[in-house]
Length: 343
Image (cartoon, rainbow, N blue to C red; front, side, top):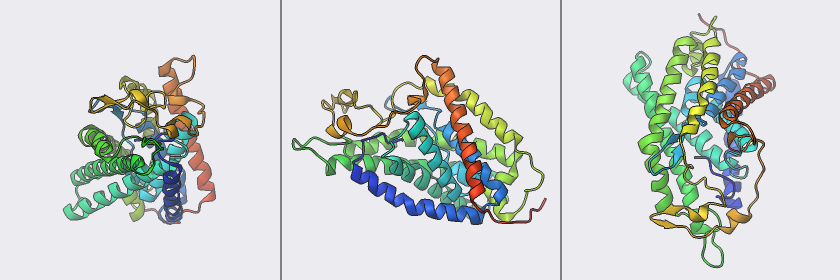
C-alpha cells in the first residue's frame, strides 16, 4: 500500500500533503489533552508495532504481496490522534531510511494509512461497542476491533487505488501515454481491493485483535478506553509489551517468505514488463523514468554484502528503536494531561 516515488504527480503529492497538515496539527493538540504525560513516550511502542507489522509481507491474490499496518490497533491503545502521528512517523522512517514509500508521496501515504485507516477503524470499533454493549463484553470488543481494522484497511486501500487510478486520466504526455501511474481506475481499484478484501484485511484484523488482547491482559493501562476513564492505571508493568516487540523483531524474517512485489510498487526499470490483463504495459512513463528519488540508507531493508535475514532483523531493530527514542524525545516537548489514577 506504500505509494512509491513518482507514481503520483507532484501536484497530487502537494495536495495530499497539504490535506494532512491540519490533520497532524489537530492530532498533536488532541494528544496533549487526551493522554497523560507519562503515556506519551509509549506511543513509540505503538509506532513500533505498526512498523514491524508492515515488515511482515504476506502473499496476496494475483501474485503480489501485502501487509498489515496496525493503524486501528494503535488507536485502540492510545487513541486515533496518537495513531495518526505514530503511523506518520513510522512511514517517514520507512521512506527515508529504507526506501519503502516515496518522500514526495509521504503525504498521500499518511492520508491513507495514518488518517483514513485509524480514524475510520476506531470509529467503527466505537460504534459497534456502543451498539452491542462491548463495555461489558470482551468478545464484542474483540469482534469490533477485528471489523474496525478490516474496514479501516479496506478503505485505506480504496483511497490508494483512487490516487493511483486518477493519474493516467489527468497527466499524459504528447503521445497520450501516462506520465506517472499508468493504470486507470478500472484496473487500480480491483487490483488493490480484491487482495485486500480477500487476504490483507483479515491479516490486519488478526494482528490487531491478537496484540490488543495481549496488551489488554498484560498492560491494561495502555488501552485508550482505560486511559480516558482513568481506570486500571496503577502499578502496571510494561515488560510484557516490550517483550512482544522483541518477539516480533525476531520473527520479521518471516516476511521474506512472501515473494513478488506489492501492486503499484514496481521500479521504473521493470514496470514496462508488468503484465496486466494478459498484456505488458510496453513503455515506461516518463515521470517514473525521470522523476526525483532519494537514495535510502538500507533500500528494501537490506545492506549490500549482508545476509538478508540478518539485514531484515537489523532493520527491524533500527526502526523500532528509533521510534521509541523519537517519541521519548517528542514527549519532552509535549504537555500531557494531569490525571489521578485509580487502581
